[in-house]
Length: 265
Image 1: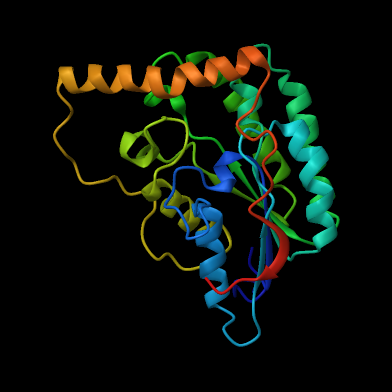
Image 2: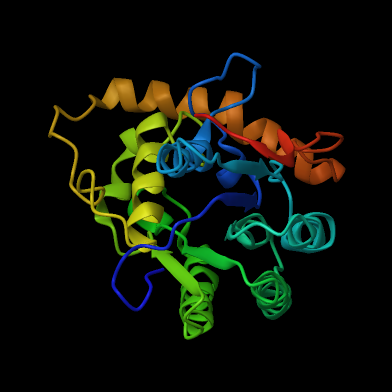
């Protein structure tokens, strides 16, 4: 967000709330074994703006969380930390499941945004990418994704809420921005999302995050079939197994940065 003099607001504290998207799944690994992720990349850039007086960062996001879990387990905790900036992403795990109650998803997402804004924090939210342009069989998800896109843009009528519109960025149709599991961002995808958030906060562009990647030769039919078979065996099968047994990849997992602590990048 920007102040009345068109100078970007300076943030000295930041809390990330959400699921695997915000935890940073499939980005580079940090020395402590956690994924880096776009939120860490964002924190590093914001921390560099305050080398003298410090910058604090917490990341409460946990992979596999549904919007109800994010609402109940993370939002009040984030509000209590009192950060000046909060990123809020959630609901896509709900949309991926059959018989998703999209009205309930919107209710909880809106409640979370309202609670976080009540602390005085600037809140950044997201519209999902369009999976139909890169994943076969995902057309059933599109009505809910479009409805959520419209919903978060309505929330952004509040000047304290910014929306990062990933849906309108065709660069995310490129599979190179996605990890092998086809659900989580690759390191390049995380780099672009971090830049998109910075842009939404009024920072000058470090690069064009919407720009297409350099063209390469498409995979051969045999390479594509091999990749599809590997994906089904390694990723789709285990995901279906967790759904059938009511388990989540985030069960028993603690946030990687549960406290608002100094961050030096």
